Structure formats: C-alpha cells, structure tokens
Image 1 (cartoon, rainbow, N blue to C red):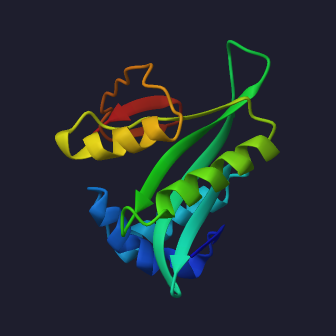
Image 2: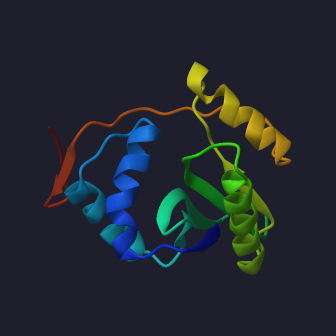
Length: 153
C-alpha cells in the first residue's frame, strides 16, 4: 500500500468511495468538483493505493487563522475503504506531514454526529485528535449575484 498525490485519472475510483462516505455522486459531477479544487493552490489531495486500486483519499486545505499568527490545515474529506488495514493511519500520517511542510501549527477536521460515524470518531481520537468543538451548518439555497444584486432562487 502506498500514499501518493491525487491524479485526475483517480476520479472514477473515487466515485465509489464518495458514495461510501454518504455523498453519492456521478463521474461528471466529481470531475467538475476536482477541476475547481485543483485550480486552488491551497488545496491538496492524497490517495491511498493498494494493488493498483484507490482505496482511500484525504482532501486538505491550508488556511490562515484570524486569531493567531500562524496557519492550519483542515481535513475536508477523508474516505477509506478496507478498514482496519492501516490505510487510514497512513493517510492521516501523510496528511500531517504535508501540513508540517506548509508550516501549519494545527491540523483539524469535522465529522458528522451520526451513529455511523462513531467508529471514525474513535479512530480520530486514537490518532491523537481532540474532540473539542461543535460544528454548525446552514444551507443557503441557490444564490445568484447579478449586477451586484442577490437573486435568491
């Protein structure tokens, strides 16, 4: 098993993994998302490969703190197939190495408060992450800004 930088040719295999995480998508939609993500210099994606098959992914974003004179990396996507084979641990270790290389002082992630995520939460705690915040979200609906005016759909 090896961890390497994401390549565009990995997208078809990632469709299945996204579905496992509870975010079903199509090849076309995922290609569109990755096209946008890859155009952003502060995003970085790693994949785990086993027997020439992508079995995991971690998506990272390097950001600046408002409250401190340093930066952090947020794990914005983390997917692993074939659990309990060290794949997740290897991906997390490589993500942390990348974050250190970016001179980030923290690495963070959010994980849903759903029953099916409890195993993942235990994994994060075992990896040394602290359960120290509550996340909130609010859907904004479809919005279009046209000629400086906000047109809600």
